Image 1 (tube, rainbow over the protein chains, first blue to last red):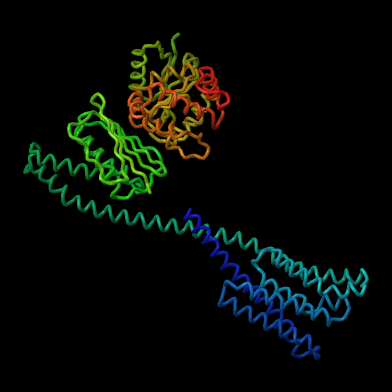
Image 2 (tube, chains in turn blue, brown):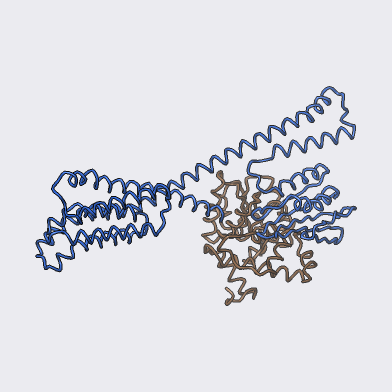
Length: 370
Length: 215
C-alpha cells in the first residue's frame, strides 16, 4: 500500500516537472512570436491604433508575469491562471472589435496565434477541455462580428482555412499533454526500478560486510578448536571439547544456511533451535505455512522459548509447525512428553496451550499482532 | 475388489516402500506398474490403474509438473501427488489442477494407504500438510471457510491426529473428519474444472456430505 503511494507520488512529481518544462517552452514560443516576429512591425511600421498597442502591451505583461510566476511557483495558483485567461480573452474581444470586417485581415492578423500560444502555455496540463475550450472561444470571438454582419460563405471559408491551420496546430499541441503524462509515468517506472536496484545492491553490501565480520569471529573461536584437535592437544573424548565442537558446528551451519532473503526471522531462529535438538538425536519435521509477518524480537524470543525447551529435552521424533495468518502467528510442537516442563510465556499477548495424552505432548504458542 | 495403483517415483527405494505399505493394508491394493517416468501411467498395464501415485520430481524442470498433472487429470485419472515439496504454493496449485490428494513424503506412512482407499472411491482425503496450506491460503479466489473449519484445519495441521483435535475442540473424531471432508469438497467446487473434481462432488452429494443447494 505504502509502496504504491510512493510510486504514485513519484509519478506525480515527474509529471509535474515535465508539465512545467513544457509550459515554459510554450511560453517561450508565444513570446518569440510576439516580440521577434511581430515586435519589429510595431516599432518600425506605420502607427497602429492605440487599442491594438494596448493589447500588445497587455499580452506582453501577461506573458512576462506568468513566466515569472512559473519560475518561482511551479505549482501555479489557479487564481493566477484564471486572471491570465481572463486577460487573454479580453484581448481577443478588443482585437475582434477593432479589426475590419474582412475575412483575410482577421484570419491573418498577429493576435490570433499569439493569444492562442499564451493560452496554451497557461492551460497546458489542465484537463484537455479547458485548453480546447479556450482556443474555441478565442476563434469564435474573432469570427462573431463576421457572422453577425452576414458574411458570405466564401469569406467564412477563407477565414476558416487560416484559422484551422493556426488553431488546429495549437489543439494538436494541447493533445500532446497526454503523451507527456505517459512519458512521465514511464520515467517514474524507470527511476523506481533503478532505485530498487540501488537498494538491493546496498543491502547485499551490508549483508556481505556482516557476514565477513562473523566469519572473522568464527576464525577466532573455531580455528583454535580445529588446530587443537589436529595437534591432539584437545581430546575429542572430553565432554567440554565436544560441547565446544557442537556449539561451533551449530554456528557454522547457521552461517552457511543464511540467505539474503531470510525474511522470516522467526523460522530462521527456530531452525537454529532444531539444529541443537537434532544434535540430541531428535528427528524434527518442520512445516511452515503462510506469508511471514513481522514479529518483534521480544515476542520471537517468548514464542520460541517453550518450543525450544521441549525440543532440546525430548527423546523422541518431533513435529514442529509454524502458521502465519495475517493477524496471528501460531507455533506448535508434538512429541513424546519430556520430563521437564516448558517455560510459560510471561507476556499477556502470547497464549500457550498444552496437553499430554498417552505420553504425547502437544504444545501450541500463539501471538496475536496488535 | 482390489484397488490397482501405478507408482511414479524416480527413487526405487520409495517405490519399494510404497509397495510394502500397500501389501500391509487391510484392503487389497495392487501396484500393477511402477517406474521413474510418467510414461508408465500412460502405457499398459499402468494406464488402466485406478489410482496414480505421482512424485512431482519425475520431470527435469521444476515447473513442468503442472502439465504432467494436468494431462493425467484431464483424462479423468485419479492422481495422488506424493512429494518432497513442502511448498504451500505447489500444494494449492495441485489442488486447483484437480489432483485427488496431496501428501508430502513426511506424512506418507500414516496417510498414503488411507488416501488411496478414499481416492479410489472418489471420497475426499485431506492430509495435514495440505490442511496447513489451505488454512494459510490468501488467494483471492479461495473458498470461504468458517472459523470452526479454520480451527479444525489448523489443529489437524499441527498434531496430525483426529483424536487430539477432537479432544481439544470437545467434538468427536468423526465430526473432525466431516469438517475436513467439507473443506476438501469446497475446494473441489472452485477454480479450474476437472473430471476428478466433478466425481468428488457427485460422490459427496450421494454420501450426504453436502447438499446440492450448498454448492
